[in-house]
Length: 420
Image: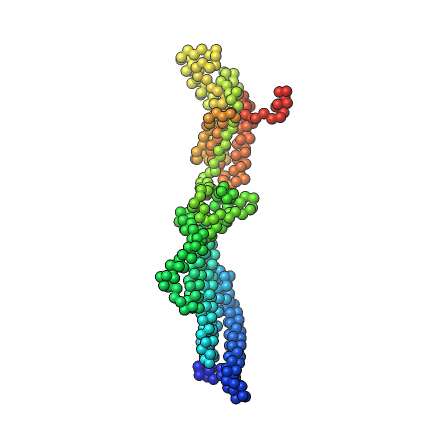
């Protein structure tokens, strides 16, 4: 059916009404109304049928392929949006022919189709972006990257271009002029200030590898302590250990200081750093009888024998008067306990010996002398790590009385009652 034939059919009602005695203006008006109903109803039915055909055909195609990208396209309604293109093309070509008697209506309808086409192409672009994001997140290389941020940035640009294009279509005013771009830039900076900050922060976070999805971070300013579950343009979402969620502005990861535990998770051990406070009045020199008694502890027997020989040799050589223990060289119960702690950690299979291990004194405090244990557990999982740490200190706290040492504790009500 050619153009002239369509025009003839579109004017049949008008000619009939004029022949029946109706004025030309009313005949044209009623002809346009009926043509509108027929054309848009026909295009709507065609759109529904064609869309169903495209969706089913795309689904059948994606089911036969091994690639998952087309599956994500189907889930993001890509076939549905694409299916609108052909009905729009049909409508675009029909309108100037069907409504040739009404140039104003023709122009209005063509502008409406252009506006709808712009919105449609933005939605198609969004579907492709979302499908690409979901597809890349399957890869280990991109799984922990803030893909959502990039998608949001590109969608902002897409909608910005779409809106400027629609304004140009509706008003005929070119948005490409320098003045318009300057005003648009100012408005954009004002409205999307946080978005722009988030975009810059997202790039820095990604390029510098500051945070990944799945990282355990601690951000005291926002009360966040848990795993990063989502990184997008404006916010970072953290699931805390109590299963609550904390939302952090993305640019705060650049502007403020926070703690990322990824280094610990990727290392060969998790640090144990804790002190035991020894009551200072319980520290003393060891007599020969004390040394003999402590030799029964297998972990330190070789050390005590070797160390005591050196002490006795020095004292004998220098004719030290040992009636007082303070004279000459002596071992202390705290020093022997410190060595015992070191030997115990080196014998513990849960401690990584390849990483730093140390037992040291800290400066005396009003709560006693801190003996700090600094080492790394092989198992980095939180629950297992806590068990390892608890087992170590359970043993050391129980071992302290064997060295005639006491743990410092603030007096309780029972202690005060006993004194009274």
